[in-house]
Image (tube, rainbow, N blue to C red; front, side, top):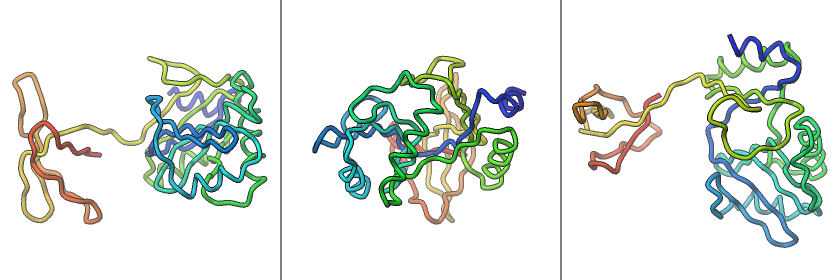
Length: 213
């Protein structure tokens, strides 16, 4: 019901929820730094580093990293100026201008739907493509790092459920038996088939987990 309300509300836009690694990208002169969601400095994919090195302005870009692609969805700083107080719609427009002034395909601006028709089309396309989910963002909201305990200016709607399970045994034909931790300790919860393009995990107590979708 809340999704339907957000679809009709012009104060909210919608974007795809990417299943990647959160990455804050900062450029200060010749210094280019990657920061994860815990605030730790991390390495950057070389293609992303090369693109950012070509920007004339000092910037901070917020996005989701998947392999060598950064899907950018926010711009907290531009030309060395903190623009976190700007409405999200204006920061998004500034991000679009920044990315489009350089010929590149490594940092991609996330598709954003503003009208009810656009949001409905995006929602249907993401579901048909079996994507992870959709995110709704208030178009006039300032930049707020982190995640609120509930509510807030960004709301995500996932199409899949995930859980963590312990690999208990390797079966034949690319299948593993998994266990879940309950009130009575670890209990067998059935078998999971491992896709052909994914490595088969091994049963190592307490340190090897898989996700079932």
